[in-house]
Length: 119
Image (cartoon, rainbow, N blue to C red; front, side):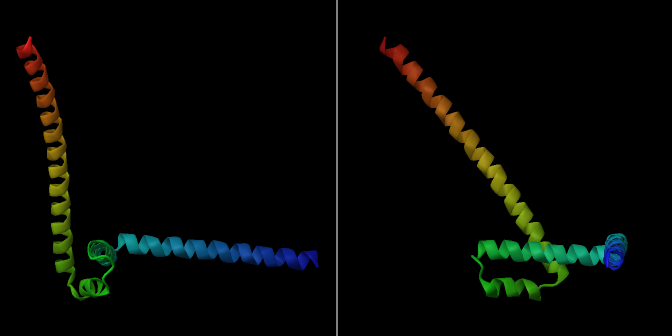
């Protein structure tokens, strides 16, 4: 009985090894083929667009379905616009932080100047 069980374990290990090798080969093919790279990038970009639209429109299914109807070029254009808007938001947030710091410093300087004038 022990011999049969060990044989089954060996067969399982062989099947697992063959399965892993198959998956590695499949992933290698997908990430080295130009058409597969293009398709993978397209699918990933469409997923990013759906995620962005879902967040901005609070999970609206009609908006997400609209992304499915867009061409790959339109999805890329949408994501390019989203990236530019995000960059602008980051720049403005840094500018407002700098402006707050500047105003805070000027307020302190004004208080110091007023104290000197009072003396």
